[in-house]
Length: 336
Image (tube, rainbow, N blue to C red):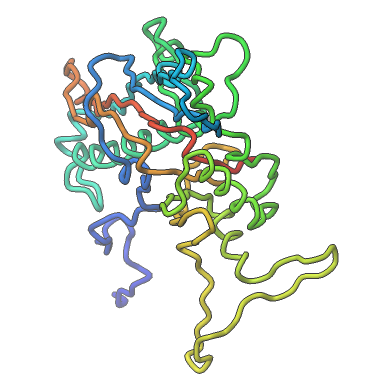
């Protein structure tokens, strides 16, 4: 009988060498909801917070001996209003057949239910991130299905200089609408953004909020983040002229060249830059004053059991959150 060689071994009988854990295609990424301050639990599905603007300043001289007239008195009632928000519920249901749970021994997995639970929790966190930053408006609940469920207003939608036409839900009071300069639009591609766009937004944001020695967090798409770093590399100064801006201050013997902008100090405040992979479609950048936003957790993500009817072990991760934008005028955005 001839000798047996590797090529002769049946794949049916061969014991495979497989690593014990999966390599996940991408990391979970939820910077906004992780960084945002957590406010108190809402006591109603519709919650409110007071907003107040300052008095307008005027220069009026007072004559010698002049008394205060009734018309000289001021009060601040006209400067006060209420902002409103709604909570939104989300869930991630998952299930594993009871036979599969008992008998399947999959490479990289020792417990199918636990493995699915971990991924479902990550998905719930990312759903919350998308819910907070979306461009969608709020909506009251009018039925018992997803097409008529209550929705919260996302941060991108809060950054508006006018309320939409018709009868929008919970319109933003005029005094809380952002100035037009807080928004740069018409940028079809991130490469259309120039440094002056960010400087213009920050000038408007600082003027509206009267904050200059302050820090904002900027969430950018990968293309917008790369474009921001390009501001340090070249700058177009004429229609057909591009000049290099980078200066090599490091010892070139190191063989290292750095092009990565993480912080930007402008005349009107400091910017901390974060690459974000889940911004709403058409949004290149959100300039956010993290002191002027808060998450309102009605129910933090939790795991619950669904009825077992003999075939599938069913579980559910659900959450209820709202977003409170204390001062919409302290934020900006750059969009298509």
